[in-house]
Length: 213
Image 1 (tube, one colour):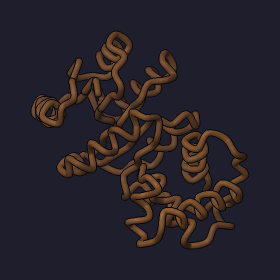
Image 2 (tube, one colour; image 1 turned 135 degrees about the horizontal axis):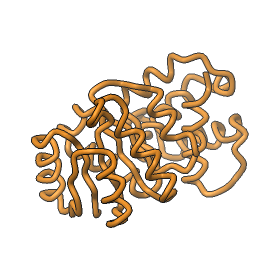
Image 3 (cartoon, one colour; image 1 turned 45 degrees about the vertical axis):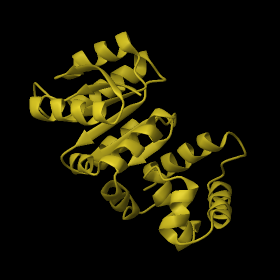
Image 4 (tube, helix red, strand yellow; image 1 turned 90 degrees about the vertical axis):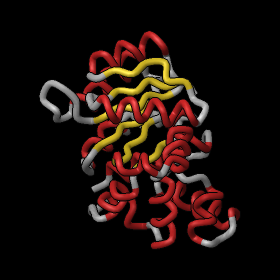
């Protein structure tokens, strides 16, 4: 994958470059602020961008605003946002369009390199990858469309929100892939998602999951 990295911490920025390069990926640009991230992404058109939520000057939500701005100029941009803290509203805004190709992980997850790279690949392919802690907070919010889901279907939807494939969900829940497929089809039906591209429906299901409540 070709990747643009944005983080105001030089140490983390260089560390990410090293980890990604060692995994066989190409970091085409590494910058320290939101506007530079947008500019580098529009110039290089990477497979995915990795950026911190909090960057100069205010260290609040510059990264998020840069991600939204980039999506406005390049709707197909794939974006993985890293944060020190869980901010559910950030995930809401990133997924609001329903287009997929976005991820939201806590920075601590980067230490699990295999899981981090798998999440990046999911996002680059147009899927979603949400941090398990974000998913847990979302599950605690009251929601209407999801109230018709069974406990098992909620588990499957939560794992879908983390970017897990059907095979990975099956392994996590110790069930067959066929069983997971049946659950996902029932989830789609209960959420009113008509037959369409499978990835598209998975993204829309996650969006409903985020927006309900």
